[in-house]
Length: 268
Image (cartoon, rainbow, N blue to C red; front, side, top):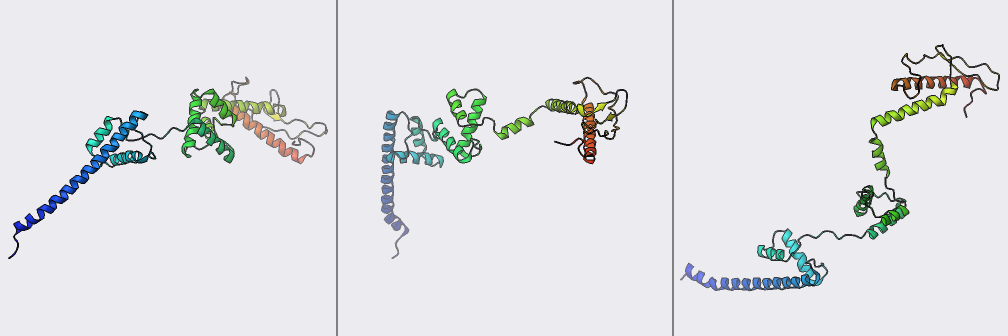
């Protein structure tokens, strides 16, 4: 006679109950173990003032690390999260601060290998540290003893890249002023090589000295425009450009002529 469905169910019920009972005991065992570690953590905090147990600090250190990993994975029970929060448990730890002396010694080793202290900023922690020293120095907040030690190893406070950026940032007016001074200097440097005939419309080249040779061919060059100002320092940019062009043409013609007359206008 076939076993009824009801009798089958009644036979398996004790087995299910046994499995549930075993699972309950196992869960209680894990709970007791967790509570025991939690109590150890309380003892650690009372002694050290925090819950930052090092990972290599025995089973408690491993347990603390596991709690953080379970929290990140969102698999830590809510009541356990609350209990850990209640004692000031930190879920993330900042990187340990490296002493200034340690980074300085790393920089000394870098210089011995590369010949300078210009560690690229993207080259790990040392590059960031070097950049920070320049920033603190720029703000005038770097301690004097640290400043002296960095200077002692030839630390460059403005590396090439920063100097290049500063040059690019020079105002246009300053660049124009520099060009004006260069053009005036060019005029002063060549004024002895150019003779201006009063009342005439051209320039003449100087005579050869000590050779008794005839002067080179006269250079008939146009005089600067009518708005040309004779007072130094008040010339316009266009006038300075025109002066520079006249002098350049004159000098180049003298050089070409001197090559055809040996001993005259020789270049040193």
